[in-house]
Image (tube, rainbow, N blue to C red; front, side, top):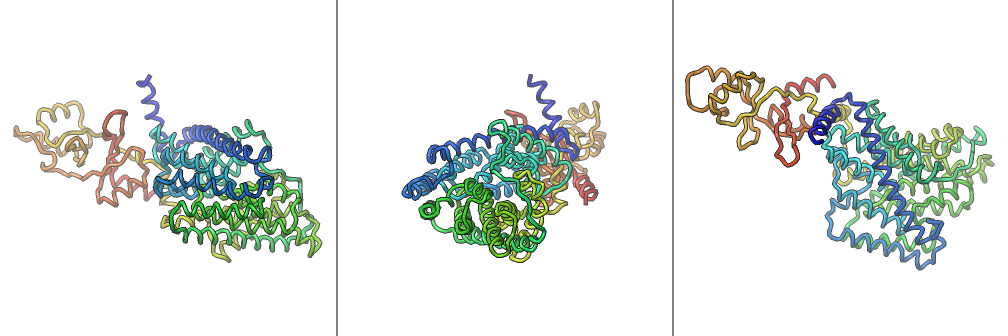
Length: 575
């Protein structure tokens, strides 16, 4: 069986290295959707099981708990999280969407198993302890890591590994919200930053598969209950502009607070966790609606059940509490809390507009708009926010006011108040830059093996004349890879060796000192992308790259060579 499977897998990997690998990438998208859907559903069931054990059938009704329990629960959770992470390094504490962006940009989308296990366990602990954080960030991390591990197990080329990570992120969002299209746009706008058709098909299949698995378990309903609302009058457009500006200010405040807390997150990690636990418990004592993900408060805001005072208090307090929690290192996400904060601010603005100007639109409409505007402004992903709004509400009447408010909020946050994507700002503050060059992305989308030459033989440094003549009697290859201690060290033209065989001498030939044109080699795994190949040659000052393939239970062996000329030619064609 192995004799038949190995050639098929090798051929599959070679096809994936090409830029024209749509059928193969589609299969990977389906696989990523299945794996991500299973992991995310298991994660969601674990979180909901703990919350139901604490709060009963209303999993997020923390207001039903005794005040002492609301105070103690986050502190207990902080202690458990601190003990779990006590012996782990700072690198092992990096989680969430920002970490996915870092691994995608600087590590070709590679995750280790510990990263997945840590995010799963810590996400369950954090969300089960009533902290004001969300499950979507951990879900994206879990989906990306699970998909990456599948690709590593199959030893896929790095260009397809990057697509797998995007598929995992798309499937995670789709499974969390039952919004497949929003999952695709989120992966494109936040993770891949690539709108090419080549990535669209696998992302779509992954998102649809993730959403399908969610529907099989939880039904086809949305995570929020939205009444069919529409804009009361076009005379409300000026107020929509004001709302967009206010929601943009809310988004900037969230980013400022998160970055401030991250900048000043000093002292022992355990003490910081205890501080966040005490702060969350204290807020929960007086405002229990601010605890947890907040979907119950979100639904109440959408159907107009909350008063103006509660809406404003929730919008401001939960914004600051969530930003502080994530800024000081809690391993969870921010998407669902910012949806709640935006909905509460939008609902409050709707009530204010009714009182001041007699607006006819219900406050629930403004809550919907605020939900999308806050998400778009903080993530700087307006298209993902709009698509999520449309899929969550199933209401085409929301498109026009939604586009206006989301656009104004995004402009206010980014251009007026100078705040970009909270994930990118957080990474930059940690000294981690993300490259967006279209040329770099084009080079990362193709495997170096597509430019590889296979017409070579491997010879040791010292070779007997008779052995070399026997080899050349069968065929004359183009290249000879010279090995020292079974490791490739130089590339020699076979014609140069053939010319030496015509001379009369009996001593073994030294392939590293005989006359001929030799080039030093640098080695990379077979999975390397064209961009990795260019970087390796530039950093090491060599002219030829030797791609190495590893078989199970054996040392890596040369699979082919990629010359500087081939890379330069490909680079010029894709400028």
